[in-house]
Image (cartoon, rainbow, N blue to C red; front, side, top):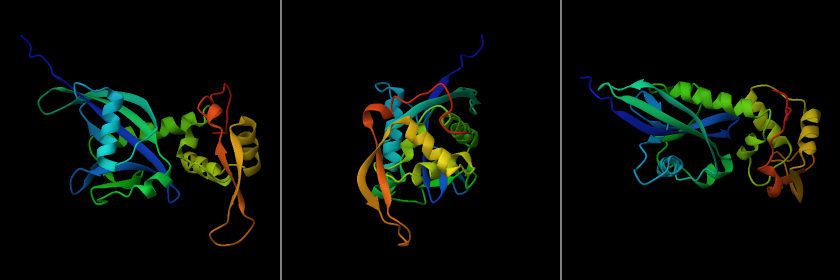
Length: 223
C-alpha cells in the first residue's frame, strides 16, 4: 500500500513599495547568504487572508490595505516526500508608511529591489510573478495608485508607473489620461521643491467614492 502523502500549506506574502526610485520587496534573512519572503502556516482558526496579515504584521509591523491572491505554487516536495503548497498574496504599501514604521533590525528584515539579494527555493520566481502581475494590471486598473501617499503631486503617479514598467511615459499624455479617469481632486495645497527651484506643485488626493471601483475595458495607460 502506497504511503499517504502529506500536504503542507503555507501562505506567502510579496509586499512591494517604491523607494529610492526602485520597486522593492519585503524580505527576511534566511541564512548568511540568502533571503526569503514572509510566510507562515495558517492556524486552524484563521483564514488565509488573516494568516497573511499576521505574518506581515509580525515581521514588518505594518498593515497592508491592498492584498490580492496571486497564485498557488504546488510543485514543491520537501525532503520527506510531502507536498508543499504555497498560496501567495501580493500587496502594495506607500513608502510614506515605511518611514513611520522603521524596521527594528534591518540586518534581518529589509526592503530590496529585484536581484539585489539571493532568495531561497522558488522565491525569486514568486517575486518575478508578482511584478509581472502588477505591471500587467496597470493597463486596466488603478492598482498602482495604492503605492501613493494620501496627498501627492501629479508627477508622483507618473514616476511610480515608470518605475514599475521600466520606461519613460509622455508627461502630457499621462496627465490627460489621469484627468480623464475622474478619480482625483485638488486639495488646494502645494508642495515646495526640496531644492527650492521652480513653482510649487499642486497636491491631489483620490476621490474615495470612485477610486476603488476603477476598472476599464480599454487601456488606462500605455504599457
